[in-house]
Image (cartoon, rainbow, N blue to C red; front, side, top):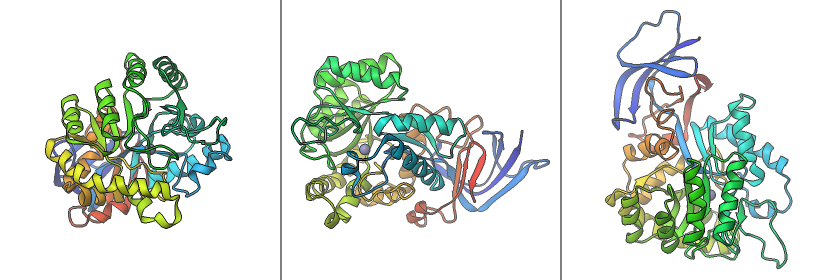
Length: 404
Ligand SMILES: [Zn+2]
């Protein structure tokens, strides 16, 4: 088994939430076997010198869409692209994420179960990409976030979500999704920004529908997530037992208290709304209006979430308008700007906390003996300049060096 010794100048310890100096990491095969301060015996090992770099665990993006890449035509393309077209695009997107330092990602809804096939292809070593946890297709209601065509009589055959309108249908969709290999269940609790004809503040699935789907998730040992902006939909999802609220851009204080009480994660995805507002002149005005309203609330709400101790996991919604794979690390800077998060808090959100949400704490999220050798590095320290997070210069996944 090949042995590698990595000499780290600055080392982010996500477990103790601190930066250490001159740490040495030993990797054998695809696992970390030793982490120590100072030097170790390098005999017979390949030495990787990162002594002038900032080294941290491979980053985790807990909300992205592998089949889309920020195209302004993303919604209309759902009427014309084939599943195979999406599969080829997804392969390219997965590689871009890996090269940017994201060694684990959670896909939050994908056309044609492409994410499930890609996860399996990556695990089989057929194509390069991050470890993937996938939702397959999400579950929403008629007229909600996952039900896009507005021409009466049309049925969306290949959208990001399945449409259900009763607890029985929600149960069936959850079973269907798990049958085809999803790792978790994604629910649409409220309307969204890019979807046409719905409102982010309005509920989508009812409490009873979400509870029915989550009963299936729970009995199969699967975590869950809810696309949710408005307060009522968030409260229903949290009370139904959801693992994470995605976006949460129109929540109120009661939502935050409920989330603390239930241990529910918030995945902020600030960059999704930010990019739509930034490129507002080139996009459908309905989406721009909704993104502006969401972003205005989000900063103030995030500061309050931070103060109240709502659990935060890093996630970006990459794939949405003008938010492309490999460029999502700008979210770190936005977390500081909009939520006043410290550098340490943002790094913990993208490592230890994200791994916890994905139920992968035994495998990833920290550089410790026994975990997968997923290690990334940057030329500068984010404590000096947070924008360095967008310039990852070293990527190791499974003990294999992909960059640097
Ligand atoms: Zn999303």
